Image 1 (cartoon, protein in one colour):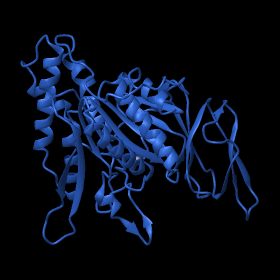
Image 2: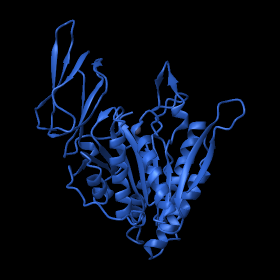
Image 3: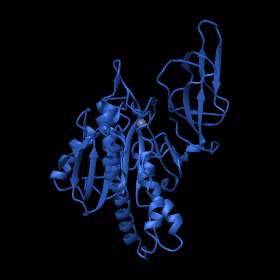
Image 4: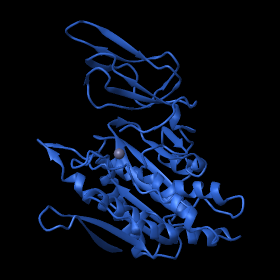
Length: 373
Ligand SMILES: [Zn+2]
């Protein structure tokens, strides 16, 4: 194992930060895997999973069982981790710019459509190698305009040429769920089954340029552009893994999630493990991100859930009440469509319009930007 330290924000008159990455196996000996935890710095379960992954990967690497290259960034956001306001960690948005730490990554596909013209051939592997080389160069040429962009560039530089990129997050309160690209829906199924995911939300383009899509979407966009003339594979399985809720920080869950990820990497040929766990029956099929229904509070009051996270709800089912203790008004929120109640706010008093919960339905019904701020 090799440890690398990346300096972030190095001007002499301001606070500077260090990003640390751990490197297992050897480049060029197999697939490249990139794993990062807590890009949203207050999403803590991911860092505990990364801690377990590091322990296990050190052992596997020492025994020569890593058959490729694995990069692990166990705390991906030192800037966000340092943001604390009056005792409350604040890690989702960059305080300096207001920008979400998981948005606005450089999308390289348009530049590659130009730079690759005339260079591709009949060999899909050779085309993939060329695409990775050009993608690395374009990310390398990204001129960061701020310390946070410097962090984003540093992370993306390590991930842009990965075959598998797993970005570990969590929701406020949630059951385990995944986000990935629609073209990757089949390939993600074993990972979803091993992690016991309750929802797998897919989109061709989510909007806002999140990290996983910066790594994966270029492949299907380039295939659309060049694919009738030159073979281009889906070169990166980019997945955002939402490890339940912010307070689901437990050793048993972290061990279980890390084991599922290692089992998946073994199935992908990156790790030689003693045995493969049988693939559990999947809890869900992939459904469109555009099929997620969000419920909001119609007025201020106390939020009381009538359904548990992970429950399957039918169209018209009562999901939660908003109870105003002064007016006495009680409003019941109903699901408009059938689906899985997979995430909710962690707050229990809401103002009008505030987010209540999300339900994964099987039919797309939303347009435009599909991710919340
Ligand atoms: Zn997140």
